[in-house]
Length: 220
Image (cartoon, rainbow, N blue to C red; front, side, top):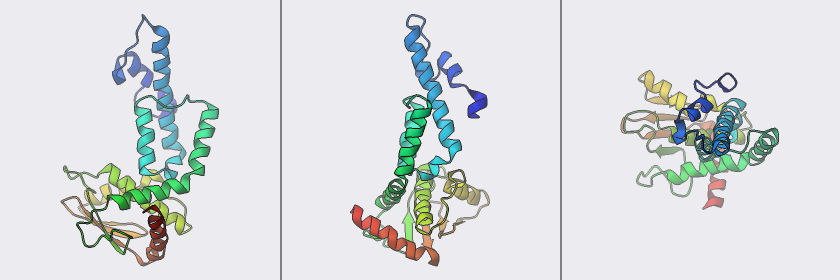
């Protein structure tokens, strides 16, 4: 299990030793064995999602939902038919998921900033909580920014960026170098100590924002 998934721990060993709030009961071994296999299946699902690149098609919200299933051991059985069905469904819904991710980011914008327009995305945006209260990168906001970049890439006819080199890593690298300016293909973002990120879209992104705004208009 450890060799296949690349994890540093074994879900089965953790289960048998009392991890994940479970314990192996000798009075009900069949139920315990079923629970143990669910934990192992969940770990394999998590490893597959991480290594396959399918997360590049998934919105931040969809990734959180799936990660919760993995954490709770509630994934489908790790079997070929289930894998094929799951991947086919995610691939079929990839465009909708990416647009939903972009809409979620827009919905979370604060209208307390005059820069943010409540009906459309414009050249400048201010995103809150890019950094958390400890000055660390906020993973959920970084994932939402990944959603935005994914949509812009698709509208631009470019390959979807690899999720393992997403905005979390980009922002963290900039912070490590004491650089408050984050540069991407479609925008620059200045990150302030209070945690907000001030985005300025580049000229090549402006026509793509028109497509984003059409999606936003349909959603609202």
